[in-house]
Image 1 (tube, helix red, strand yellow):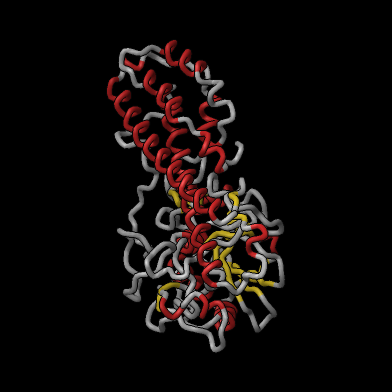
Image 2 (cartoon, helix red, strand yellow):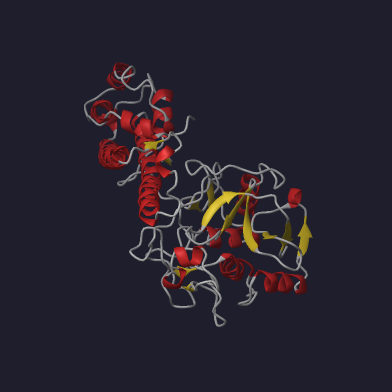
Length: 421
């Protein structure tokens, strides 16, 4: 599947898409009319990529039973179409706004969703107003990318439903998550953290200057109960399916983060401690990095950050006004939720000592499993820690100015710890 680009969003033709579904949702329509209609707009959308484009091209010429045979399904398809059409309209309008701002600053938008400032940034590395404007527009584009992929996915589901697979419920595809929500998280409806505090999220009023996801990373990876292709029961079988999905390549190879296809386990849906640790950390995506955050002696969870002893990024991003995690604070929280023990409020060095005291196994990159802990830096003086996410990826609170995010695995000096069974 070709990746969705900003140009693809501009090429979305609402009138052509609507034309297809007017026939698909016509209760008097027939399969032949749908097939004919799809062929009519084939040329109009020949360069349409992304998941919606893939579904459209795969279903060109398909036929289905008379949709009048199931009026309820017809109404559901119509509902899904209306929602995806509105989402697409909003995405196109937002992209127009971002492009207008970019052009006014003589910047361009690249196919991989980056604001390219070109020569306009020369000599302005200390111009805070310039940097803030650039970062703000990039954050807007990052958010649009997530919305566009979601709209593309909704549209793909509506196309597939229009030709008979899969059926939709009244609001779109049936939701996958069915497990109770018991792991604390940053969003409405999640249980509260033990610290009783609410985190600063990307895009919040307190996110000033705005955070920026690192290049090649994402803070928008979907969590779900089942891995792709698994429709069996919960329990050991589902855990094994997740392990297989997350181990298609081992930790000796750096992976690539694709928010359009990658999914991670809902921590409430799995029982394996490593998978639960991974899921608990992944649930924190979008929570701000805060230097010193997550080290309340009484309970794991988000806390107010601090400023470092000398001016650095913690000063630039006002970490003392943010509530979130630093790297070891995130790992402490996730390990408590997944493994059932609190490593304590110490830093990375203290954590490694605690792991050794518990008999954690040191493993090579080739034997990394989801939920394993990776400590970077010299032995006895670690400077960063992250959680292995499988397939050459990790989840981390990287540094001030970034949210909790999923990133490619780094292979500089490090040690891997496997905790539990």
